[in-house]
Amino acid sequence: MATPGNSRGTVVDQADMRESLLETAVEMFSEKGFSGTSIRDIAREHGVSLSNIYYYFSNKEGLWREIMNRSVRSLPGRLRAAIAQADTPRAQLDALIREHLRAGVEHQRELLMLLTEQGQLGEDSSRETLEIQREILEIYTAVLEALSAEGALHEGHIRVAVFNILGVVNWHLRWYRADGPLPADTLHQEITNFISRAVCRD
Amino acid sequence: MATPGNSRGTVVDQADMRESLLETAVEMFSEKGFSGTSIRDIAREHGVSLSNIYYYFSNKEGLWREIMNRSVRSLPGRLRAAIAQADTPRAQLDALIREHLRAGVEHQRELLMLLTEQGQLGEDSSRETLEIQREILEIYTAVLEALSAEGALHEGHIRVAVFNILGVVNWHLRWYRADGPLPADTLHQEITNFISRAVCRD
DNA sequence: CTGCTTATAGAACGAACGTTCGAACCATGA
DNA sequence: TCATGGTTCGAACGTTCGTTCTATAAGCAG
Image 1 (cartoon, rainbow over the protein chains, first blue to last red):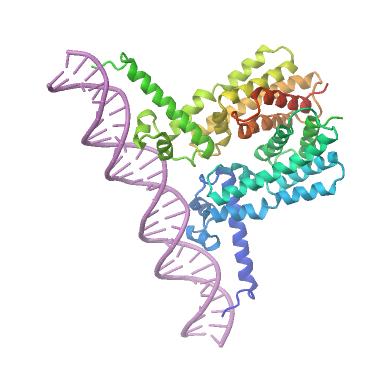
Image 2: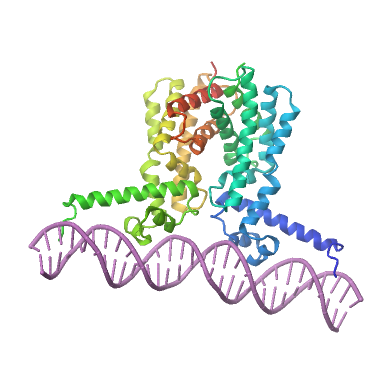
């Protein structure tokens, strides 16, 4: 039996190929959507044969799910961890938004995919992405309820405020260009200020 | 030569068929996207034959464009008209947002289609929808610049504020259900308040 | 060199796609 | 009554889709 694991060159190459294929797939999925991107498109863009993609991934939906699992799946946990570091509800909201924005810097296209998906996937994958979005919604709701409990919120439905915040945060994934003139730190500060003024009394 | 125009029944039926086909198409396009919706899907959902759709519309993209042309195309004009009715920049922003939200009540799914489209259409249609979004962006920018000129704005880039506002307004198209428990008027008031607090000094 | 495993490519499959065509229906006017 | 023309449908076209199969090149073990 051959020992492919010992031959480092092969293993690294395989991992690199997987990684770069995922990168190309993310780019195209986030721009054209799931059903707007064909596996042939990804193969052509990556300069590799169509069938070669099936050597690395089970199928088209498996490719999508792998992207989701390695960068979006962990988002709710990241957000909860960020909240846990803060003590006051006011600081929690700030930490929550900042962590969400930071995640957008690392995985802008992947988070866009999460929002792009509109019932184009199979039932399992669709349920999974909806579950993640629901988790995020609950995280924001909990923080805003804590703020509301100490009277720090403006009047109105918490649910509406949560969706408005998510609108601002998610929308920036669509228009912000990391290679543009606006530094991410500046943008994050302005978005945080925008949301704070909108929801918090002071 | 038959005079189909005189026989009112036929004409009304034809118009009705067109209308109801457009309705079905809007519903499916806005939920599954352009390439995620097949003409066969629309035909099946509407209980009509596939080829019959081609009797009323030139092709799939023509169907999409007709929907855009009859309800989204006029949006920039609507927004400009609403602004023209107000005299102060502060009142203009209020009128602008309210008109935008009102348009969302009438054409929620159609406006969603405008945001859903991601390079899945042909070049002409794609350029058209981008042009509409650019117009809307400019309208908001002009109003915010007027506000900024009289020092009524919080510090920060106007461009960022515009995108944040559009994020809130556009996002509500995705989550709001007109048949839910939250009245549209209440929602509109809360969204308007949210944005006002976020951008306006007072 | 000879086998064996891994990685890649090309050909092909059945299904679904957008689109077209021709025949059939059906209401109307003469 | 019959002919006419608007409306509908089923069948079929060629293309593209996701996926599978088979063959081949390359690297290592004996």
